[in-house]
Length: 213
Image (cartoon, rainbow, N blue to C red; front, side, top):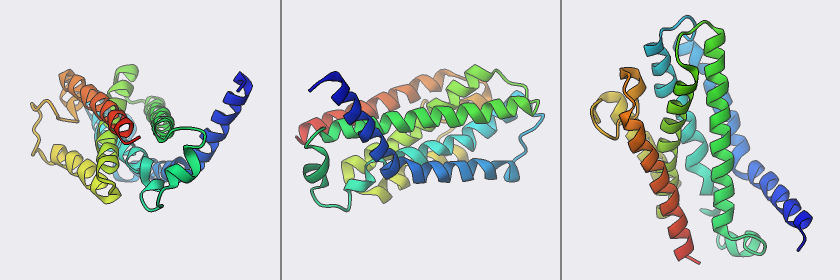
């Protein structure tokens, strides 16, 4: 198989999976982000309030985009064997979906943060973008991994949303290593723990998929 053939197959694979698992959650994310200014002001904010908007509201896109990444296979018997694995392994399919969703999360958060800057909010742009991406992808990968391991999409949403709400309500407090909203309190050490959660979920998912071959 030539290099051109491989590129063509990946291009088709990206297109199919974008339509299959990305487009609907992406549209939902756009609608959700457009709704945020209705429930929370987004202009002339100080850094603390910008952090609140980004971490407590915008980061939800991680749940919307990442939790359902393996949902097409949940209700279709042996779809991995009958469709995808003829060319690519299911593990590669999932890796491509994670890559696409992670890139889109980065783009959505960056765009929203730039809009906040345009609306005269005062905050360190790069640091807040990175911190919000880490929060979004940590809660997203928690739900994704749960869905993959349990073969249950609802359980994946429940775990991600529960984790998010436990931080919002203070059940997981501001000093806890797993706290999601540390930028609000001008603390960054928890972000290191969240990065480990992301890595653990992705690597663990890869190992689990490999063991199922």
